[in-house]
Image (cartoon, rainbow, N blue to C red):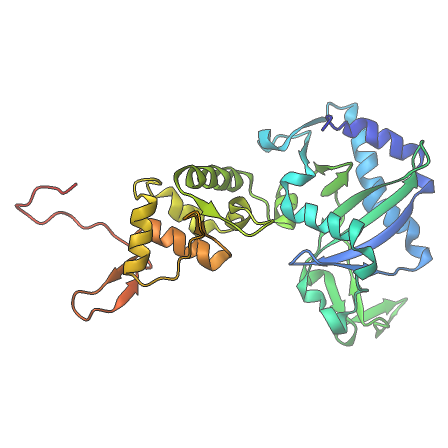
Length: 323
């Protein structure tokens, strides 16, 4: 994918800023989008709060030394915005895929049916005709919190000198400030912490997760359903990834692991090629627990237990260390 030039993009959009159409979407914590209708009188406000705010910032700050760097090199510097490929950020990619490819199935948002308290963010889709006649688009996304909403029954509006009941069922305050843009398969990050919060993306955790996934697949023969990968299953499983960091991957062979599972009477399945089948989070958790030797049979009552935490004890006095 060619390197994305955010400065060229901003200059191009500035030239056609009055000829873009806008659609608004809310999306929940599962990154399910909802269509939102809006009054025509809000068009300029939407352009200003989402598009112009970002475009004008890039153009204005470019003359003051603003740089755009790869997100992987981020270090919280001033006068720097970051970029990352959209396909590296699973939740953002899923959201855009649904808007682009499942548009007809996206429902319109109503608080009665979907509840604003479940909403994670708001995204504006801007569309315009390209030079080749095709329709082009980009997105500006922002975080929304429950505190951004005012319930009509519990809120008043000040009209001149008089308080009056809020006439709407729900009022929303759209946050100011640049956060995240999605353009041509790239994400432009204006505010790193807000981007990471919006899409629950932790780059360092992602690197560790990918490394552990590779080590596991190098050491064990695993089988997944079509479309599912070990990387995808480990995503956001911080406790599992943390546990894997303390496990010597490969110290237990595949045969030993399967024997251990049989001994503990666990339903760890294998296919015809003797690959361990990982169907879902439950199977993955069992597999990691086996690697960590978190199951045992009590010599007292013969019952099977899963150990939630382990603390290595000192060797008894007078006995040499084992192993």
